[in-house]
Image (cartoon, rainbow, N blue to C red; front, side):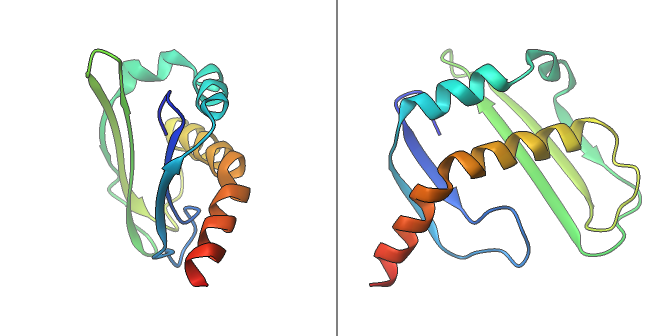
Length: 117
């Protein structure tokens, strides 16, 4: 999503992955609420976190942010679906993404129904 209200989404982050992807104009207030909810201290911890224990199904969880100056901050977590002790940063982003999914869920479901017709 971006500050103009454009929203892109594919699935909810749950397995199995949803193949349906959609991009549309949205509500810029959702973006503003998500930015307000973001703790800027996380940007001190950008990078790739490759967990040595990839128990369960191996997954890569990526989150990227682009500033108005076109700088990009990327967080990538490589782990397994059953990996214990993933630290504090991944659960923080998982909660952040869950908020974004909740905020766009009604729109996403309506777009999916429209596509199936």
